[in-house]
Length: 419
Image (cartoon, rainbow, N blue to C red; front, side, top):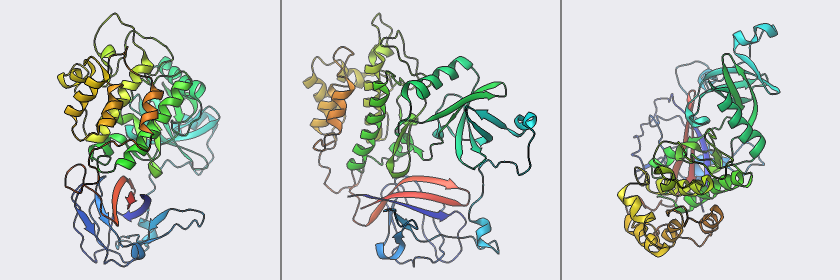
């Protein structure tokens, strides 16, 4: 049973003890001997996939919020540069509302805009990790200090389409980024949306996090499927389901982002997305109309293989290893080709993928895929319990695997799963 543990460490550490930088994925860093609140020199960075070892009675305590069941690392490491440690605890990098009263006519000069019913001040650009790749995304804050993401786009029609699909067609769902309003931002067109804190699935997949932890992989896969199923139930196909458009936040919560190329059409003539994630019906020019909802199913299959292996399964659907699967004449042959391509996958999981990686006419709908994935009896990998080095290394008792890293000013926020 895995337990999620958020903990916080300062990037400016006091010089008391030394601790080596952990090697990604397999080398544990043993800090059992540290006292809970002693300042200590820490690694220059934590990486997703690092394994850290802790002594429960030494460095763990209940969160200050007594209603919370989460655990938090006790040690906070401060800089010895400042006389007052609190001065360097957190660097405030968030947008701050001006202290003086601003004339409404001058608000845009201060970067203040009203999106829907919410007036915000715009701060620095944020990475595409927080809201998707279509347009430029900025951090924003309202007068009370609540943070948002504001996506600025140059084409009004594209902005209006995406806003309508998410805010009006889909509505509010815990697995999908929430939109709060739209507005004019200078010469551009903005969408005010939820600021999703966390990492993209891509970062975690590249660290082979999910090939180390089948149970965690199934939790995340289930969350992604729930998000896509909800969008489909509202008549919206995403069309660009990839690891860069899935955010993993606190408690491994999933957020599907970037609906810039989504559609409500039942049939389309093309799906224009990069990265080789499209199904063969969209990848090759043909007279067949494309079902964007079944294309989402194919893209989910590519996404899941990517997260489980740490790399894309193929360059595109026309690659020889892709065609060897989807062009096979029946589900059993496709499952056999899957097993040959990915020997670590169980035959049961390849049976699931055989109904995903097929031509459009043979592909099963999302509900079929979802019913198999969320089944607790489904085994994704063969021989998962064998302890060995490599992608399926078993995490030892008492070790914590880093699942999320975020730098906040002078601190790191590090989330880990404890076993």
